[in-house]
Image (cartoon, rainbow, N blue to C red; front, side, top):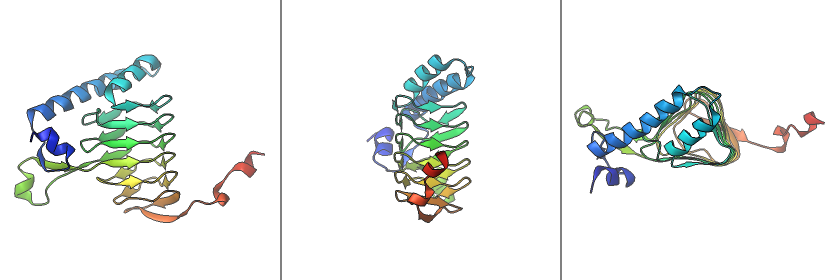
Length: 194
């Protein structure tokens, strides 16, 4: 079994494998080119993002700079907005659903390293997927750890470190991130818009 197949299977793999290095270089080259564009070059930016990501939904917006390990292991749903400074460490795969609002400086990290220093020095990694379901709002400077799922419609407060999965329809925040409460009709702004 090759290192890419081990990564896909959630097993320990050699991150220095030449094929993985080639794939990372390709993804980083596309991200670098995107990050050099003028904000006015919208069409070229969309072309590059569609080439970079495995899936890039209609109406999705990603602002530069964006950083990836591979890029091709990222799916971004339609109508999603990702603000400046996102680092998407996508070895384990990152799925961001439809109509999500992602604040600046998101760190989404799928890779894990051995805890033992001698084993860590071997360059082995293991990657677990991150899933951000539809209609999630993530505040600025949030870190999402390997294997985490954030449920549909939930809100993650700015500065949070999400170390475990968050259910749908809640507000959660803190370090580590914890559920504060369910979202309710009292959270609606409809009356304010009249």
